[in-house]
Length: 386
Image 1 (cartoon, helix red, strand yellow):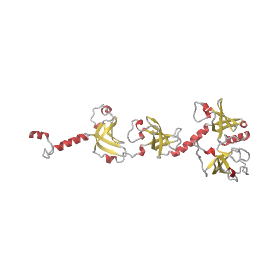
Image 2: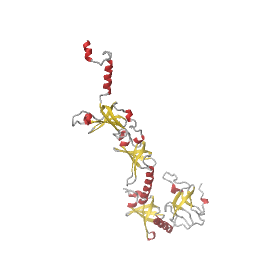
Image 3: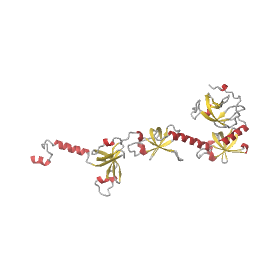
């Protein structure tokens, strides 16, 4: 319930000046009004609507300290605001006085964009005319200047001359300050090593742009190489637009003009190199698939995320042989493990006969073992018996 009756707005107070800034604590939140402690007999008040976000949710709570500006609607009024102007009710002289204080102290003002005039916009701040140049409207250039007409926006007063007859304001400075504040909060939130959730917003050949949850729309890059330990050739095969993902922040740089944050999905997966030496011991024969070629040899995939190298010197090829033509991607290649370096993520391989060939030979030898009396099988010996 709103307890406006508890607020004595005519009680003796200190002599606040219109536009004067204060730091105060919120002591009560009513239906339409927020009360603040002035350290006096009476409390000040601010309209609750000033603290509602675009979804109508309250952004403050009792006990919070806030910065506000004295903006009386009438004599002995203890009304404060987080911005000057926009609500009306002040006399012209009082409104100009408040705007002058806003100019001197860097206090935001609120005004309605009335019309487009030469070089910019005519803006009314509690009935007082001010001029906002085109270059100072918005944070980025707009193609349709008329889109601002009729809107109530926040501004900083950059010039106050001739007793308030010449007032120049800037919405751009407000937007830039808000953007900076937003990025500061985002930079604290997006710390390296943190796991975050997000939604894929666009796909590129080199990666995906992901809108990170809890950042107000900030997009980070998920490089194609960080999607999975498995090699991803086409990003469309691994991700889709509007797909929800979870990833780890591996880079966060807000020092330049363009903040850069990189994500990794594969960092949340088990590293396939852990235990690779035990999985593929030296001497083990294993069949894999050629995934790519280089001037020095073939890369053969042995398991998800594990590629080994067959050096060209072990292939017995003629000089100038085109490896990519002789061993196109997808070719099944039989190898023997020569060495595994889990730390360096390297597996050395050499060509081998296929496991199927070895199994076939073993089966053939075992089938004729009894005929040969346990000796090594000799096909010529069997022929002489006939």
